[in-house]
Length: 133
Image (cartoon, rainbow, N blue to C red; front, side):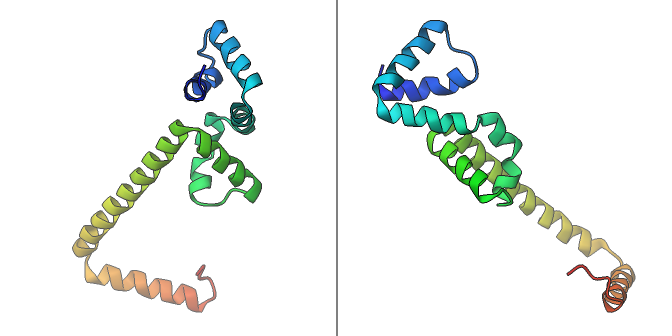
């Protein structure tokens, strides 16, 4: 088994989709290959499921430093999660772009008296000390 084959089968291994013979081949290769042993050790730190469940926290950089470092190591060995992260970021970016366009259109349709009333109420709230900014 080559290291490339090992990396390819590793995801299937963690998903429980490998035949027993393939699991034995992986284990044998890992026992002989220091690099693939390191990859397995990193892969065992966190799963793809863990990554997807905390993806928003990862993107928002709200994970504790140690957990973020584990996720960064996971990304270094998992092309599926790397692709998923790229897709997630692209989706979020497109969503923001779409919402900004919708909000501009919506703002054009609001009566100026409503906008003035909202701004006055916000200013009054801030002057009372209730502003959250």
